[in-house]
Length: 589
Image 1 (cartoon, rainbow, N blue to C red):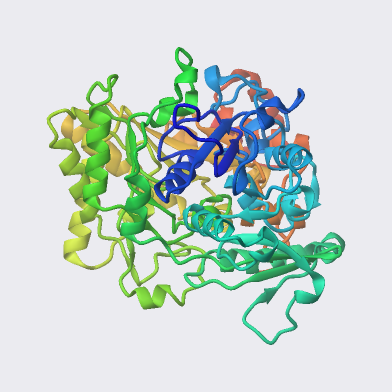
Image 2: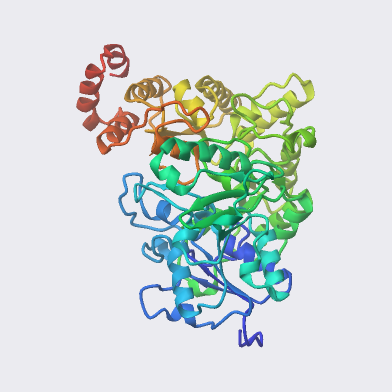
């Protein structure tokens, strides 16, 4: 600030992550966007909240407001395993060191700032705030919590992609508006008096109150359906939820970003590097993205356990080829670049430039997934634009190879449309993906083998994975490649029984897989799966759904992943006899 001649910053941003000036990191994006609009932005990464709060004092008072983000992950997912055990590392901290942020930084940082600077507005955002904007089940407290605005003293919450709302908030405060009067910015959440909740004479949606949801889990489940539908609408509506003597108002979503808007965000002058204060230290999350390029935002898969669409939306906002190639050129100019792009991807690797053939249909659509139970007839699945990006990147002299590290939706690339041109392009996409863009191992996510579980997950039938594996093996054989297919699976997902997991183990043995990428289901705020876990019913049908809740039930399911490990054989054998499945026992061992 002294070097720049600043007496005061306009916005001071506190984040739970180390500072990496990269377009994949939320604090960097919002900081650069505000800077591009003429504001002076300072960023304080991972402030110490345990001492006399000197980190919260050192840059003084901002002219406009403080901004707070817990970081690129919900802090509780960052800190704890599915078994609620404390993790020993943090990928977003120098040298992976644990303990650099508190639980719930959205609350803790805002409390520190309000204690020191009570009259300065505090605006919270990021994944943690975004997914906790209304009443939600908190797995780590094992309780239904109100909107995080009821626990945090922040004045306003920004959810989803924050560029547009943050610029509008800054502009309105700069124009002299008081934070308490800024109550209608799209993609913001504010507290209002109870008497402002509408009584049915408008398009707003009034949810069951937090207190109703505490008394009746089915009310919470029904609320979630309305919340998910609204978060995925092109033109959303305002949501209201009474909580105690306060009304939580969730203003409507913005329409998807245009290509020009998303280019403007990605084309800002990021250094793509961690801050120099971290010289000589390794930040694990940065290692994953340092030579990667994100092509788009959004995901229309709508997986029941995933929060991407709740935060980024289901409509794809794709960058222009010019913007992408400009960033690839930046990557190739980095001092440590050895010729390998680690990922040309996004939330899902192969949704770039895809969307509705008729946008007017999309603007009226309330489906949470464009792929489940089967691909929407209005969905354009032509992978031509993505292949064009791959070819252009690989043609650069400095690029030896570009890999696809993001997850591939094979149900999208293998879908037979009946259009000969598109089906041929997508066949070529699958072959080129396997032949040219696999770094030894291709990660895909069938998630389960039982179709009843996959249906709840909003994933395709397992038979489609078998078809993709056969294709993968054929391409490897055709070109003399020795690559691995690495499938991801989840145990203890709502709807999954111990018998389902036993059958999964048998199928994996018969397909010759010794699984590595597996996890126990972790309920995270604002997903269909979490609501089913908490309420015991599916939010869309209100019908009962079995869920493994106890430690013993979860362990009984998880051990089937490791059927090949001798230490589990006795327990699995006893369990299959208890289940009267001697047939599975015979096939497994």
